[in-house]
Image (cartoon, rainbow, N blue to C red; front, top):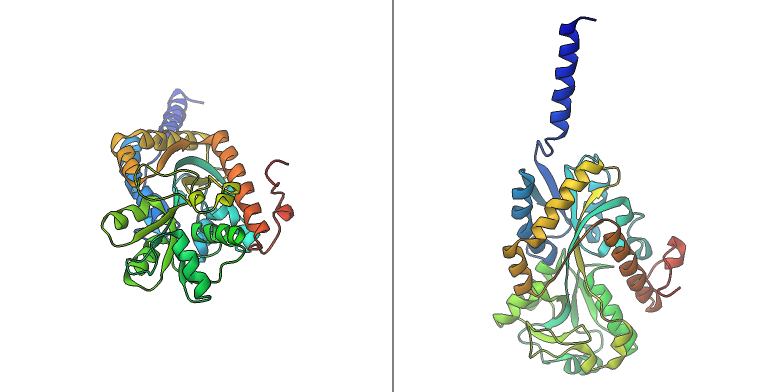
Amino acid sequence: MTRAFLGALGALALTATAAMAEYPDKEIQGIIQWGAGGSTDTVMRAITPHVEEVLGGTIVLQNMTGAVGAIALNHVAGAEADGYTLLMGAENPMLYKIMGLGDKDYGEFIPLSILARGTPILVAGPDAPFDDYAGMMEHIRANPGEVRFGSTGPGGLPSVVTAMIDAVEGGLDVIAVPYDGDGPALTALQGGAVDVMPAVLGVAIEGIRAGKIKPLAIFDVAGHDKLPDTPHITEFNAAYETYLPWGPFFGVFAPNGTPDDVVAKLSEAFAAGVQNADFGKLMEDRGFTLMGISGDEARAFLTKWQQGTAWLLQDAGHTKASPEEFGIARPGE
């Protein structure tokens, strides 16, 4: 074997190593589970520029709606595990199995970062004939089957909050009107197409401040400093303490099998993005709570969230299959 040939092999090896170290060397596709203007979309579009700066690459964002986010999840789960197709989602996939929406959840993915979590809030249209939660319940009981609740489908934040109300109040006779995300649903609320919307505070807050929608109650065991005049739900009914605190979350995921070095680089970039002052201020102003967790910590968070929410829906009679069928343990067992 000649010295020239050995030299060529060495150069080829160095070139291959350099190429592997250049990730990303093409555009990354960021698939957002929900429509434009919603809470997930807001969070992902806010953090992406800061992540791109750290990565030295471009993330092209695409809203892929449908089937309560399952279309986007299945698309990314079926993509090549090379770090160039990421799922930017919310909490819904953790409930797909029990809601009969699919056989996959975030167990199919590596959690690159659980970015932030939100606080649920119940809001109404500006012309609704009630101004708080107690007034809403009185109106619903006086007008069964007439009040229209905005929804994002089974397993979405509105469905979980509605299940809580149903469980605590011993029934909730309303009409669920589905939309592809809380952004379109809140727009419909402002236009009078629906009457009430369980939403995440971070997306509803601008409409509240502008007087386009009115807050009925924050779904937490305490008030929120962004809306100090809005009561929290346990002020109306202490029975909600059984289920609270609870809230949605927003995360970025890569398919299982993505190379460790790529996962590490992406996780570090999103961790840096969470720490960016501009992103932090936006999240604080919108009422989101920063998290920025990955790896085992993120997996533990996902497991705990899934257990609590799945069994809430099971006990309220809103599931199509028991969590037990999928090995989802009841909290505390």
